[in-house]
Image 1 (cartoon, rainbow, N blue to C red):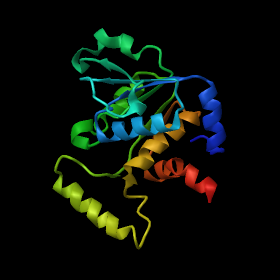
Image 2 (tube, rainbow, N blue to C red):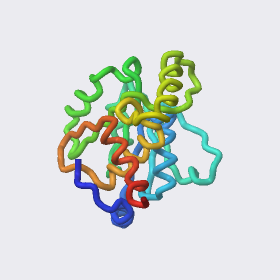
Image 3 (cartoon, helix red, strand yellow):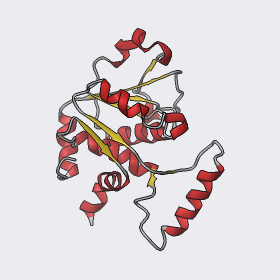
Image 4 (spheres, rainbow, N blue to C red):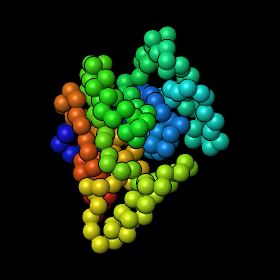
Length: 197
């Protein structure tokens, strides 16, 4: 992980570079939160979401978001959608069942990006529309435990994860492939709070 610097200065310098980004998986909870954080910070001159279907946004903040609809079964035919952006965020599948349990990391490394950071939280704390009884129980238990002990080793709030992804984009590692787990995600995602206290 790159040395932590003043995140505000890094953001200002990053904005001046007029960079663009794409987000895969903006219809999921992590992707939605990431898109919200990217638009809030106004770091990118151009934001494109790539997905299976076009999304509908009501808020004015989303009016300049570009959308590309692709068939993930035929990605070779849609390579143009991925050409141009300086930074890519992939938020596809956050559970082992949906995400392929390690297969994604191997395939990503094979793509040979200049720099790639994989965020691997143990449990993402958020409200879900779909019912997952075990996850609901874990959130309730972890919520109670958080009042008496630090649970950063066990869970990450979804807003902290999204902020960590954006903060990491403005202060990338010098490693070709980097894996960030809970402790690092909390540290990077909470840089703003540390600097104001």
